[in-house]
Length: 379
Image (tube, rainbow, N blue to C red; front, side, top):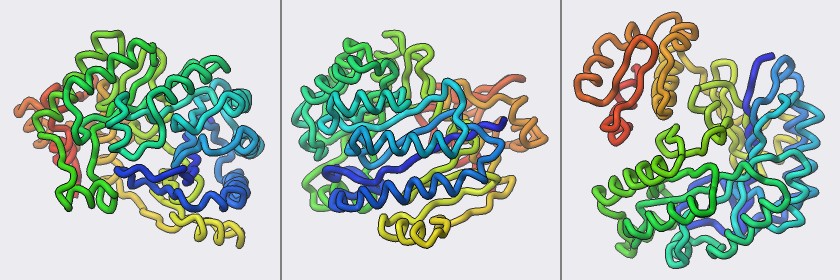
């Protein structure tokens, strides 16, 4: 059977974080019941489309999925199992914010089939958590982590952010060391992006917050790589580190530019050479589902050039790089044949390295990855 990834979007939050531009809402929790019924209807709509496919990974993201009760999450899992073939041993992840978890719900999440928890810690220092607009304390995280492990969760990711306002290199290194001591098997380490339309952007424009110096940001990035690699973590993607065997299989679906279906308000999909996205507003999404109409709002037909470009810059995010034989099997030509001038130039600039088997970013290329990716876009 063909493989597919499944993404489920839960757009509800307790409070919108100041840096967040995700499709999430803190003032619409009264719609949760209707939303879950609509989501189950959309899952049923995909039953025919996914005939002959099996889900190798499922990712329940948000928003804050851990706002849902155990029974509510169990009902989503039941709908997925009834309508989509799920591969034995599939990775099934759920995002969770510390402070919204409890042991009773965690037990039901785990018993319903969820086997990977992704916890949005972001920082270990209370001052930084407050600056980000997070609702939890570091102690909340520790309590939730203990409960998660007690009910059976072993595959746990923790998100951390660097280049935060008022964050120094010492605070960043301290957060990394704390997670190492806690034996967290997967760590995602992202730099803060000042997204358009967020509260952070407004504070920056009013000169109330300032981005950190670019040189400090680069030092933080290098510190994460050095500290985590020296403590047994595999650096397998630009922002992700894992103990052996704990690499995120769902995200690898994205980075290898493989098929995935997104369900829920604003969810995105890549399937049959198309990228498409659902209606983003909860009300608009529910209205479409109520009329038994497909909630897709935008469809983009991809050209071969689009697919090649995306496969290159997504694949190069991974430290294993682009497998040349797999690329040739998919597109009928090697990357060297597609980019006869660009690849030698990038290699000459010290940004990539390649041989007969693969193409990878160099350390310099990782630092300047966005410049490399721009070069690989085919007009």
